[in-house]
Length: 279
Image 1 (cartoon, rainbow, N blue to C red):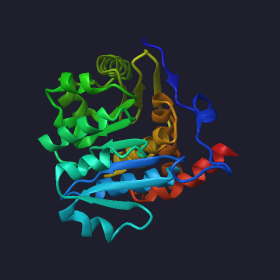
Image 2 (image 1 turned 90 degrees about the vertical axis):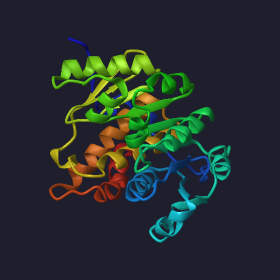
Image 3 (image 1 turned 120 degrees about the vertical axis):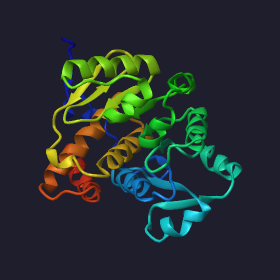
């Protein structure tokens, strides 16, 4: 039986970012999220979560054709349009960006792979989720060789199997083994979502989140989780702790809301969770 730690605030609470009198929006982290089209809701959910989790600036890079859709629904979160790959490259290489998220609503296409690699080349932390994982199906080696800085992969079971070519299994011990193997293979933190979410680091550390309520089995919840984790990375948390803290905060916010939870509800409860953790 592989040993693991059960996720709890004691593992990462001291590392939570805390704004002070000298903080400004850039020092609190700049999150840039790749916004897909025609699926636009996923990136917006992630962005709301990133902002509520404390990022000083949250922006979504959006195709020009989708600007009116994103801009009509966003206020404090910026929609940054691009019409060419060169314009997107300018957004991605902005030195002020602290962390990237790509995948929610991105589409399973070569463009998603190309944009993921561009983000990784900046050597800023990157969270790779959803469509960006599936886009690299059968190309895990290409992704592996491109990871040169803190990186977190956040697959559910299907995405894990498509990327790594093997089912993560059903029993917890098997899931831990497969997630740990994937983390060592990729040189990245791998967070395998589920009722018991497994977080494995390349150095062999494993944390299992057993705090999630069943109400989190709802569309968009994973996008919110990715946004929280990216925000914590942008604010300077190490990748394993950012993954574990994000998972626990996500779970606790859902617990606070209770029955009838939808993904849009989760970000609204993040500040209350953070306030308790920082008290």
